Length: 149
Image (spheres, rainbow, N blue to C red):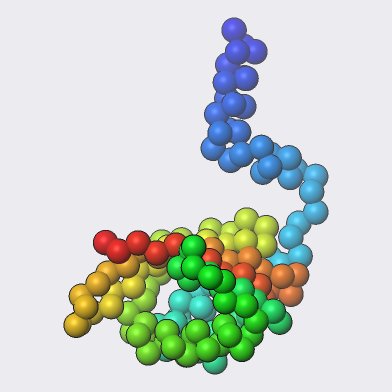
């Protein structure tokens, strides 16, 4: 009976956290602390809300990609990504907020946001941004999952 209970608990834990997290017991820690990634992602939201494309670009690495929304053609390279944020910033300024915790695993982070675009469209969007960081703590890929409410 005891072995069955233990197997059941291990099975439940593996379902919740996944086998890769359990296997990381002896793995090397990520080169960037989770707090640094979390802070970068929170700054991203602050900069989006401020309409500050230049500051957003300070968070990105040398050859980033952006897929916003997911399924669209990826935007590749600093110039193209900066142009994307310069177009998006006026629309998003003052309308974006973090809607939950930033979750970090290794060099990847995910965060829920709300974009309340206000008048005249009165559209509210649920957004989950997923970002991958390099060993220097710079964003190298951002993918946005967007759904209207």
